[in-house]
Image 1 (spheres, each protein chain N blue to C red):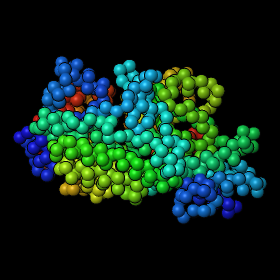
Image 2: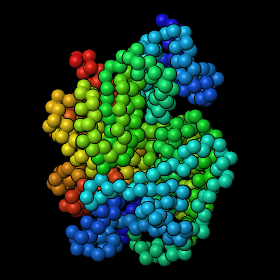
Image 3: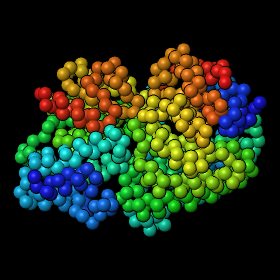
Length: 354
Length: 224
């Protein structure tokens, strides 16, 4: 049984030979793991860990993003600055919100939105063929688009984006429409170029805090759901399964996700309020496949390798029987997670039996 | 009690910012926190009464509903915004000492971390409950907190972090502050923070939601 078959089998709620393995990280972890394990390429790392997924997408060939001050301007026009939070690691934060003072939907017609020509789609099928034995997912970034977390939040600011659907709903809808006018054709072109060989189209947005939802379910259905459905339905025409990401305590949103057509829900942030693996499995296990679940708030950064192994086995006991579960970290592996814990997580998952 | 004070409390509770704001739908076209606060001051109602009988009352309801997941971050932000519009009218009176605050809360996201939405919500809620808030922003180092304590010896400190990777800096800041000022009250919070971590680093209070911070401050402020 190859990786692709293994993953597609759990999606059909069947049990394969072992639980499928997902992988996500921050760049600092990727380099460290390769260094610690004496491996030179990403592919060698994924093979070493027996990761069942591979990622594909078009290459960006548009206007230069690097600015002279060392910052980057992305294709939405948002400038980002790299900030270190420790000696070896950091992340990008937006410097400004270019549409923060724009409230008139008409102004959106005058803005330079990203163009399909800024990406080269010609090598996607070749990438899919190279990884034909693996479950193929859209790359992080624009191939796995969002609406709310990106670009609305960087464009108008987090706080305004949270209030906009209530205080200026016309603008929120107009902005969403502009984003979709680019994203839906982008997805169409990417899927066409892959010639039906992409297994998972991922939407990477966020609607949960540690305690609850970022907005009420009705608002989500009114303002977010139609755009997600338009994007996912486009990908589904080409045979891709719809893989949805949302961090946080999103249990109350799961029925709405299922209604939108979500087939896999990631990352099961188990320390968030109400995200209890056994309960999620009992309540939704017949309707959606879960992916993720290995706690990154306590277990992976602060646990011992033995604790990680026990935690992984407990999670699999709760979630994996009968299929419908892919194991992976509950966020990108962060730089505070020891290498031995990452290795313990994958070893434990591979030795667990259905 | 003045009916307008109850209306103002409702504006805060439901996030009715001003007359122009379309939210909440059931208050559309009516005066909001902005207009009503000004009217109350024009009628001669004492700023301290407006704060305690309308704004704090409204904000307490917001905090309770938020901690029960009955409302969400957007509603809380709109309530906080309504509060800010009201406070803009009241601030001149506080500056002249005509109305007392319950205390001073110095808050910031810790060194290395630039996430501020949670910290901002806590700051708004605390201000809405009658405290002066000094917001040091994001990426705040221990010495900046220490400098504020020197200026405001009785202040409460609030530290926020979103990342497991920056929680370590929280520990460092608590230890530097407590090394100099062992009695200073420090609250910590943020997604990965727990009561165990709070106990371990010797902070005084961990709360999973902003209402918990307010309750803690109120308990200490009353005691002192």
